[in-house]
Image (cartoon, rainbow, N blue to C red; front, side):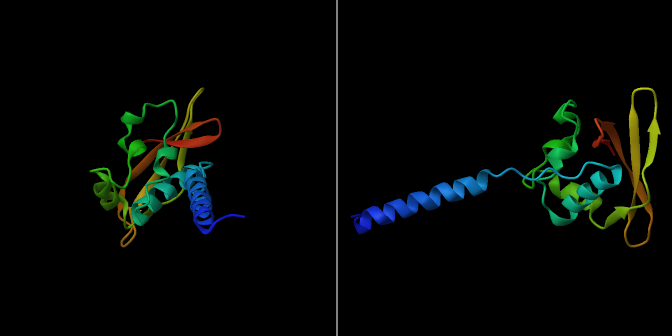
Length: 136
């Protein structure tokens, strides 16, 4: 028969293991199937302040340092600047896709949500059917 102290110790250990398992669950891989989907993830991260999906938006073969956004967390010193750049923005239309012999790229227009003013483009590259950030 278990003593009360042993029962409490067992219960604490069980809760600890369960919480460790819950924390270890990977972040779901975002939808990278279209340039528009990638741009929406970028805008959603800026609006929500949740930077978890940003690391998935960069191609694994491109050095993460090349695009600061690839390593950005909500604690990053430039995160608020990133949020300010894209909060209040939306997609300005469909992606413009260009294909050469060995490279497919896209650019998605970003506009100010309030008045539709063109703010710029999010540039991407396609690899193995998925789209990744290339620049702004």
